[in-house]
Image (cartoon, rainbow, N blue to C red):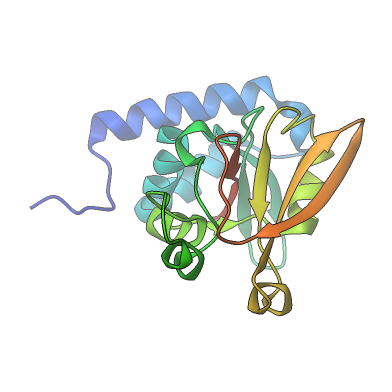
Length: 187
């Protein structure tokens, strides 16, 4: 029986090819990182590689963006120009999804991220992403919402307009065709 969170050899090889190509094309996103070391770390963590594949399949275009020396982990963000297509039209969490009386979305951000084995970008990470390029110029992305805001029914999202990162609020139950979410994965 195949492990649900492991890739077939051909899937793994294709993902490595895609990730290496993206790594080589975007060297401006990081300094002093060696793809060989990144690949060794990924090979030692097949479930993390599976999560990267889920990010890729849903349109996130994951790329390594930094290395955390304290935890000895590479950090990957979704680096697609716009919010990943396969993760749009979703409300914030299950509570928000269940609160809708009609026109419920098929899924929610928190459950999707958990199923993929990734975390939602927080505001600091979202702002760091925007230092690497221009993202979400036509779309927006839900970001991790502080508990105090969520308890009051709200949730946060962000985008990039007028050369500025904007962080907004909305009811957690709302969803839009142009709003998805971006993830982070530590390996």
